Length: 206
Image 1 (cartoon, rainbow, N blue to C red):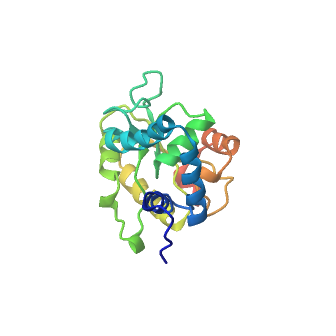
Image 2 (image 1 turned 135 degrees about the horizontal axis):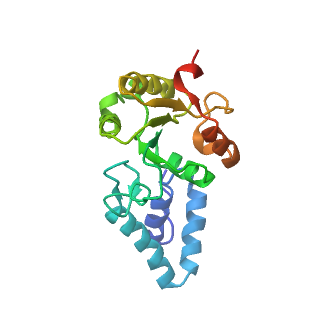
Image 3 (image 1 turned 60 degrees about the vertical axis):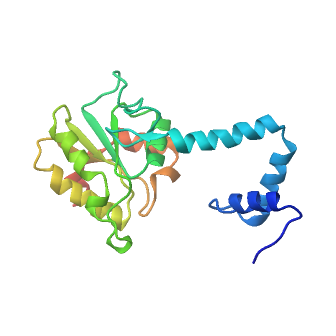
């Protein structure tokens, strides 16, 4: 159903906002009207930030986190422990774990989990680059920090089988988190503790 507002410019803006997740038409209209009350330069700064974000953001060639530079600030930080890699599904998980301030290693963002139902196979994820990183030397431990869903478990086992031939420690974050939980919904204290109290992967599935 197409509602015509008094202005097609207003209508177009409302339609763009209502494409965002969780934003219905009413909220979209409220946001657009709010922006109209702002000074022109403020709205231009808002719009430009989005345009610049999309145009200039890159993915770190080492860990695939979002970055402003070819290698992200976490991977290039020499005070971090490059012998530990924490494997996560998404960029949101990196942000959640960083917020705990309990992890000093590096990350590897898979870009999802293996999910045959959704047509996502191992080749669609950053798995090969993870294996290459681990094989290339300094890594002593890989922490599997994927969500405790069926797809997360499938991916964990797939990675475990691939990594177990390399002589490293494979751990998983200690889940005081119920099945089906995603990392981003866990409070920072619990998540921080579960990283510190991580367990050997094999033992956690007996």
